[in-house]
Length: 365
Ligand code: SF4
Image 1: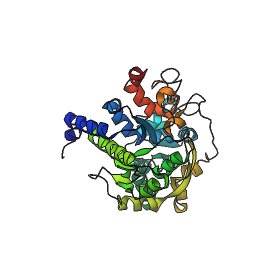
Image 2 (image 1 turned 90 degrees about the vertical axis):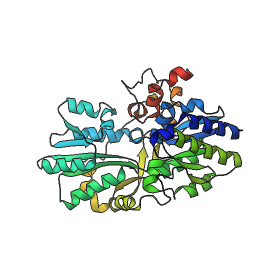
Image 3 (image 1 turned 90 degrees about the horizontal axis):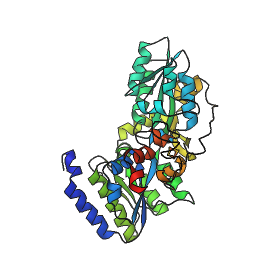
Image 4 (image 1 turned 120 degrees about the vertical axis):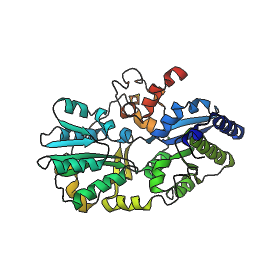
C-alpha cells in the first residue's frame, strides 16, 4: 500500500475485523500504549467494532498525561519570573498545576511562548541575550532527539542563557511497571510505532518473554491498528508471547541509531516519577553531568517543589489499564475539557479527553 487512504479502506477494515472475530475464543485485555493510538481507535470507532471478547485499555503513552504535577508547578514558578522567556509545546500551557496553568502565567504578564521545535527556543535565546530562555523538554523517545539536539546546539554556539526543564520518559520501563503490578490486567500490548521508529524494538523481546505477553509494534491508521490487534490475539490464542513488528514501513529492529546516539550524547537513564503512577526506576532521560549547566531545575532552584494530585482523579489507574475513563466519578462532572482535573482530560492525546470528544459516555452510559 502506498497512500494513506488505503490504510483506512472500509472493506479492508471489515475484512480484518472478520479475521479477528474468526480467531478469538477467549476474553483478552489488550493495551495500546500510545495516546495517539487511543484517539485513533476511538476516532474511527474501532473500539466499538472489535469482538466483545476483546477489552481495550489505554496506556501511559501520553506525554502530557504522565508529566508530574510538581513538574508543572516548577514550570509555572520559572515562567513567572520577570527575567525568563518560557517556551513549550502548546499542549502544556493548559495543563493545570496545583493552583494555575501556564496560560494564567501568560495572562498575568509572564512571557510564555509556544514553539514548534526546541531549536526555536535556542534561536529565541540568541535573539534575547538579556533574558533567560527555558524550554519545557517533555515527552517520550520521540521528542528526545530534537531536545538533545537543542542542548547540543546551545552548547556548540555557547548560548549561555538557554536551559531545559527536563521531564523525559521511556516506554519499556513503564511496560514493566504495569506488568509487574499485582493489579495488572494487561495480557498483550500494541506498542507505539513512532517510539519504535526511533528506538527500534530490540528492548521488547526480553519483556515479552519475562512476562509472557505478546508485544506488537503497531502504527496509527485503522489497518495498522487492526493488523496489530490480529497479531496480538493470534499469539494469545496460540499461547505465544513474542515481540512482533507490524509497522515495517517505519520501524526496524535497531531503530534510528543516529537519533539514539544524539539522545545518549546529552541524556542518561534516570529514575523518573510518572504522574498518577509514581516513581519508576530508570524510566526517564535526564541531562548527563557534562550538560548540568543547561538544567533549568538547578539554574532556578526549583528542585524542591512537591505537589499533591486531586483526590478525585484516578488517572494513575487509567494509565495502567486498571480502570477506564468512564469509571471515574468526576468524568463529565467535575472534570471536563473546559475545566480539567487531571492531565488525561487536558491533553489532545489523553484517554479521558478521547472518551469525552468521541462521546463514549453516550455510547456506553
Ligand atoms: S476524568 Fe478527569 S479526574 Fe477522572 S481520571 Fe480523567 S482526568 Fe482524572
